[in-house]
Image (cartoon, rainbow, N blue to C red):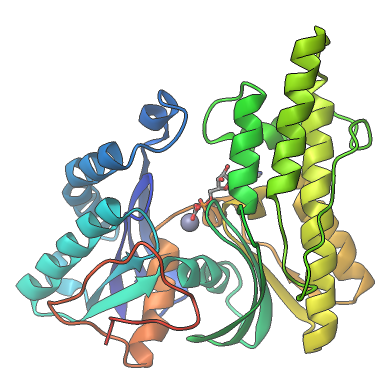
Length: 340
Ligand code: KG4
Ligand code: ZN
């Protein structure tokens, strides 16, 4: 089954053709980062407008790269939640029009379920159940992936997402938006122990996390240095921050592995590209004799191939939508609404 998948939830317009949830036939991504970088972050109105300009061209490009005509597609999939509402609506409106015009099934896909499904493309033998650490710009979750369409959140951030914290710290260090990748690069020459940064613990659930105190500590470190006329060692601050993020994520993931008894750990989302986090996860997985699934960098950030992968399993589960499909800015991964 060949699915044409559309992703427009944030600042990347993406279209892909994916076969049977595992094989990418074509995948195109057009990033809007250069435009949003001028403003230091994503401007929702501009994002929607750029999706409108790009979506038809990218869909044609994805089909042409796949050597397919639109009639050859078996179903249309689209990210319908969560994300920027105006941006999501562009994809949903486009996908509806194509599905109705071609008289093909329309499959709504949760963006974070898509991030997890990137692992099905990268690792053809990976099947649920497994544990997944999801670290993106808007989400930080430890998820029990019980089945392809069955999820339980075991832990999550109480405030900022890991990616959001990376972006805000990058900004205070004068790095361009989105700062995660730039922080990663800067950190490679730094000393992880030079700046003492907090590792927050939250009450009630040992698997829950918090990043806002860490973010504030970095901002205060930079501002205090500025006030005293001292220079900041940017590389070491980026390294100390990356180490603190990993120290928050990795032990909790280890605890979740022990609690669930899983020996399979997948990682998903933009922050899964982080070099420091990847190395720490590798060390932890080795210690626990756990199979680690780290997708290639091209599948960590937003793309439509991951949406096409998850769509296949949603389709098998009967999760199709009608012409009344709407978009939703927020939606939990484990309890979908409005798609049946
Ligand atoms: O998953 P994603 O592409 O979009 C969302 O669904 O949010 O994640 C984007 C986030 C941004 O915060 C970005 O700064 C971060 O992922 N990111 C990184 C790295 N590459 C991207 N954070 C740390 N290290 C990286 N190498
Ligand atoms: Zn994403």
